Image 1 (cartoon, rainbow, N blue to C red):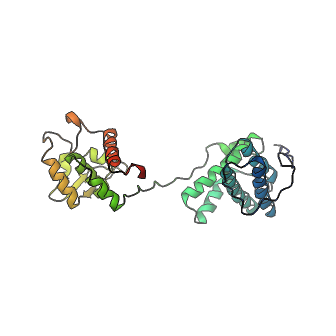
Image 2 (cartoon, helix red, strand yellow):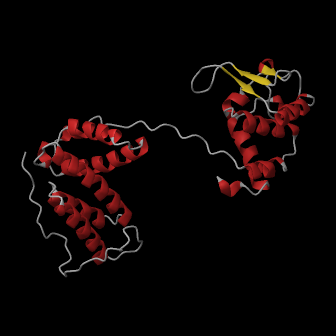
Image 3 (tube, rainbow, N blue to C red):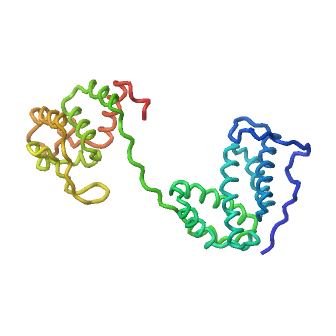
Length: 280
């Protein structure tokens, strides 16, 4: 496979300019001259390490500039590519034509061994794949590199807990017994909304302050949710008012099953009433 020639001076600003060290890579509204200076600054760092592929990195960064990508995009690209090219040098690669799928796979292991978080590894891998795709389009790298792209599984983030002051502010505007019981149970037990909406009366044990979850929504493993005092009190008030003929603990208007959308709208209205809708 032939390597396309990339002119060394292509797209460069003909006027010499040394960018200041404190030039912000993430500044908005940079004119083309300053964007060129940022690119030259990155390439200077690349050249100091004698890394392979400098002409292609240069052309790739200028291509981002032509597509009006933000300076932060070029910064992130350069950071990931410098890491990738440094790793290829350690593996003894002498040209970008010789990179393989194993190089990408071992890069992931290398980053993991360095203690990088999965999200960081995944983000850097995406930047590297964007560059590899660029090389494939120019017939520099083999197309097989893009088949069945490698992925890093990102653990699901835990939901952000409400501040105690916000909880009190929310509870102060809850009017209906059903809504108060629902929100308190969710806050105090950590139950998923789907689990709570599916809860039957036979699974509620107020004397033991428990709700039995026969099958969790995601893990499909049963567990016990323990109720706090205020959640028990709110449930007691609701149980005295609800229709005893209903199978579900919570239901909607006209004795219909309460759906996720309706519950979310209800919660949103109370957040707005409490002045908390801007907190996400």
